[in-house]
Length: 298
Image 1 (cartoon, rainbow, N blue to C red):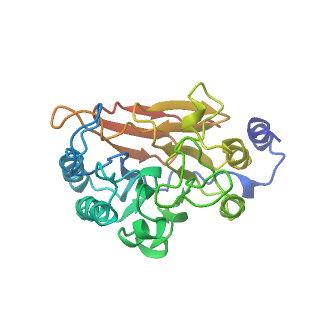
Image 2 (tube, one colour):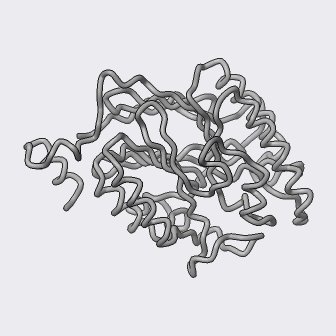
Image 3 (cartoon, rainbow, N blue to C red):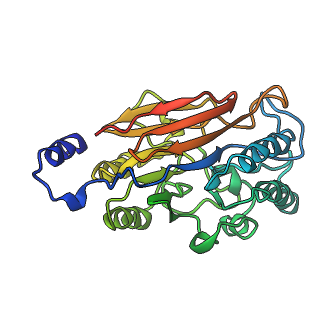
């Protein structure tokens, strides 16, 4: 059944109330900080990527986040990069530096894996040198809950044969979510009808006019699962540094602009996302990131 038809049946009272998204005026507004694609490394600029500046940009973002009474912050992948010549020890040093700054937020911080996070280190190395709170610690994909909202983090960093990205053994244009994770995602969404937000690095809206090279190779399978569950409000993505937005069947797909692009202090990109009790989402953008209103579509 298509999501739109499903919602129409709900509005007609055909389906039980237990499948309705649980929006309530009593649920408090939730706010979180958002950054992506920092690509931090101590190396000279290439094209429009200013690797060294990302730590300064992040410090500015963290200052804003720490004064904004947020519930958590999250980065959507490619937290670090590597030197001109791949070196595991040096790359881990870059990761430790940027992670220390990220952890200076006075609240929970969460990570999403991006392809550059495994450019010359293993996925296990990245997870060991970063820290998610609670049950998300050490996990590449996971879920957590805040103020009656479920957040699901996906890891699409798998090759076409579903082997995991590891020390650069990948083509950035080929990313997949393996079957085990798809089954887990379906199970998470079946738990209950609480409003749900999805985070991942690569893009899922391959149905749009965006380049398919930027999208998850089996995005259709992932989207099919999401569209079966009316509680899914939005997907927040990185990877495409210019940013992007699309919407289909009541789900918003917001691609955050990459922080790495251009010089500091002239340019930066970060945001505060507000999820309101009725399911509306407002993204307050800073510097090069513009504001975005995403109304809940019943």
